[in-house]
Length: 193
Image (cartoon, rainbow, N blue to C red; front, top):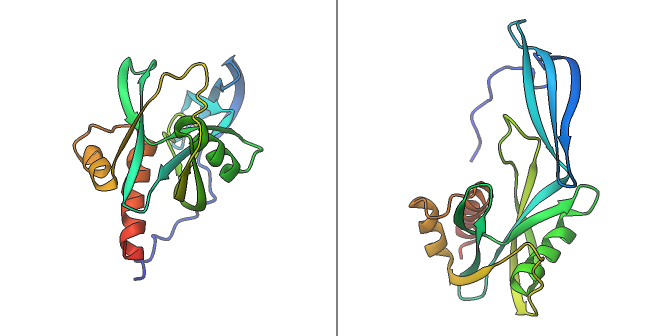
């Protein structure tokens, strides 16, 4: 199936002009900067950008029976509990597949013999430059879980279809999890699984 033609637009043209940049805060994971800008209509203003020091990595483990695993944890920034696909950050310079393999083992103890990258995404592109990747991990074997000291995780094995329903009813709200689970469902449907 072919896509309709995109509107005639120069996708390389940047209508914003940066006048100055100042880093306001940084830690090992993020940097926050404030830019003085001219906006597309020529008006002066400020733009705040959160730059991530890692790539976001999400994994959808899938066993032969069509089950997946969710990770539950209390998210400090939201002040609420969250069910998500296994995920974490990988250094920008590291191969994203290597980071995905590490995260899956760390959070679930699972190892996968087959990996398919199913998504590249930007989590909130109006305020952050975070780039994310989602992998489908198949042909699974169980190993030991190795959580980080900041993680108090609970694992939930359930049918992929149930995890997708959780996205559709807003029980799963994490953007990478929602995008990854919906895309995994589509990829598997196209494969005929």
